[in-house]
Image (tube, rainbow, N blue to C red; front, side, top):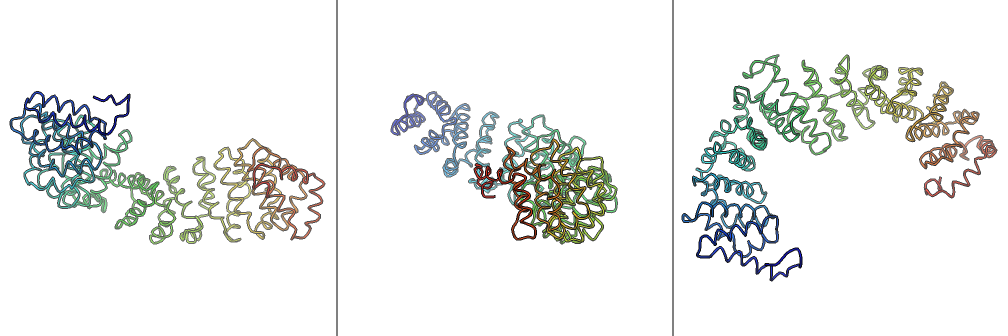
Length: 593
């Protein structure tokens, strides 16, 4: 035999050795045939090239013949099933070849044999074939005796349970499939597996329930009343969603609950559940909470999923009504869901506007516990972005006062959200709105936030200031009334021990001020600030150099009155030398500037 590791074999040699494997399957001595199959098994494991060769050379029909021969020993039949399973683990082309050789009816026939080890090998191979996208799932339903027989094999071993439930969950693609499985007792047979000692069995059983219940009222209504070891199925699902379970299990359990909720099997109406879920609201709350949590996690990073969620019938109405549910947990989960959806520009422009989501959200923000406030105010930040049609009505509803009060919270997360929402609101806003923000926040609070210990709060406050100080008339107006304090705060930050980001944002504010008409003069008469700008032009960080250079270019702009005097003063202060140096800078943007 060719030693693969030493010399790369020629194709003819590979084919020769492969042919040798196939030839041995035809030996008259059954013992030699068995040994041949075992050697073949060891040769194909993890070797796709070898698998393809053996298939081309016609190993499959011979293996299937041996597998079905009554005269073959139990051991030989099992080894044949194992090799076929290994061939199926290869490429999609391998699977196509196996299916074309009618492997499925042969393996299903094999399940009638009494030997458990052989049954397990057949099931494992069937499982591998059926989970491939190229296998027509319909082949499981051609012979009406197959499904009931598979149901009866569920009790044989943990392996039969794992493989059969996996086959079911992959082959349940249409309402007809759901009905066939349902009519053959899938629910009663699979439910006990949810508390199996084996994680794989529990997980596959759970997946089975999620495909059975998908958009299926009949299944969902039945699930509501199923008991597993004395416990309601819904409670088992809720338990599987706990944080200590693997994510895959949490999500699949939440899916099952969601489908039950959607089918109306679990509903909360007038404080009691329609249908007898223990007449205990707690479950319904847990279920709704679960469903919302699921949607929140699914939608958090995926635009397509967000679109699907909002397009699901009545989904937005359900989320909105969840915001005013009596259970705090449901309210929190609903607002999480909303927050997740609010990451989408598309949704902010459409479904959020159509459903006037901002109204219940604002209501929720009145005296809610902190964790709800954090989520609700994060969502509000997104609703206040300049392209969001909800921005106008929110502004008119007195939101500014509410956000200003959040900035006084002990919780940094709430302070950040309050100031962040104000920052979004001030972006490209008119003079009136900016004036209201400054009035409601109060200069004292604004300057308190500029010395906040939390960097995020400081960054967003600088962002707010930068948005307030944009467009010339606004810059001049705010600087004429608060200029002294603003420049004091700026000086403190530029002198303090702050991150590059904070200092860059602060220098950008100075550059905005330098763009004002009358505001320019406040900078020109403040030598301390000019020295700071000069210092940052020579800083080792390019971002800070750029921002500082921006300040100067705004101050010396030729088109405006007094530009000559300003240029002269800056010349005297030695700015020309620094600019000369910077023309040699390695950063092209800085050279240009």
